[in-house]
Length: 322
Ligand code: UT7
Image 1 (cartoon, helix red, strand yellow):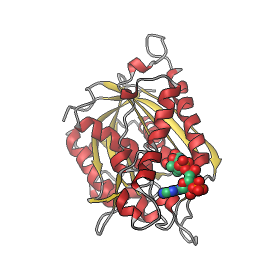
Image 2 (cartoon, protein in one colour; image 1 turned 90 degrees about the vertical axis):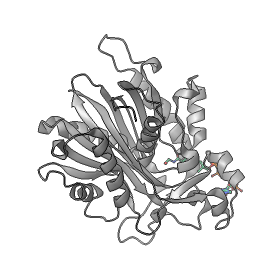
Image 3 (spheres, helix red, strand yellow; image 1 turned 120 degrees about the vertical axis):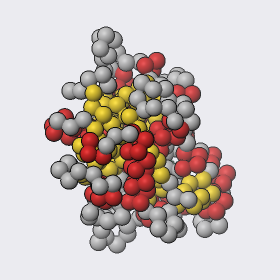
């Protein structure tokens, strides 16, 4: 199978910043508690006229425009989300319509919570290969503020809204190695349409334990893939490791356990909070915009979250510098 390379990126988040101090006026919490336990200082919440769909359209328009591709070249649209505006139509369908993309391509949402963006990349690769297409639009976007119980301090301080879009190209010269899995757990739970309580509940301690095991496990599996020269991938082949941004302590714990260089592990939960499927593409776009990603480098992406899903990939990144 051919590999995948990210050839352009876009991101979107709402305009309203909500600080830890703002939240301490609503629930019994403090900036000190939130920032020391999670590394989060502020997050964005959607206001009037902003939603998962509007942000997915905004970030996808930016990614398509930056790619310089004609829109007819896009061969599938996959959106990773758990917080779409409607149960149906999917966010992907609404992006397809708004960008006037082709009507003879597969267009769907993927629900794998915080691992969603990695799952979506894998689904995209499979569909491009099966349908003989070259380019796909992959989005990770969330409006988690609509799923929060603002009286539950154990969850409402953690999450935020936003995400990003990438255009990927299937190519002989690109790399895409992925690992995906799930334990099927209910440690993070949110009722669906028609249920009484449609807000997120989480056993934070259990998820923390899962995350600090899943992250190094994924990395180990990814480093066991062979390169073209027959040697295994190593951290030296990777420009940045971009983990799901749930909690800075989870990333720090793994860096320490792996005796890795912390500079290779990007963190931006301080100003976005946990945006579930949105966190990895938000981080890719931010790194790219800051000029920290070389053309033709490789990224390691790792997600973990609800359903106790996990997923990781090594993917080529070949977008023109901003
Ligand atoms: O994106 C999906 C993946 N999600 C994750 O990876 C999340 C993983 N879990 C975590 O990041 C952490 O477990 C949390 C940040 C959610 C919680 O941190 P913790 O150190 O595990 O705290 P805790 O749940 O053990 O709570 C400690 C104390 C409790 O008080 P008592 O029972 O010890 O008196 C809580 O009631 O902190 C209390 N607490 C708070 N206090 C102030 C819980 N939330 C808050 C709050 N402000 N917002």
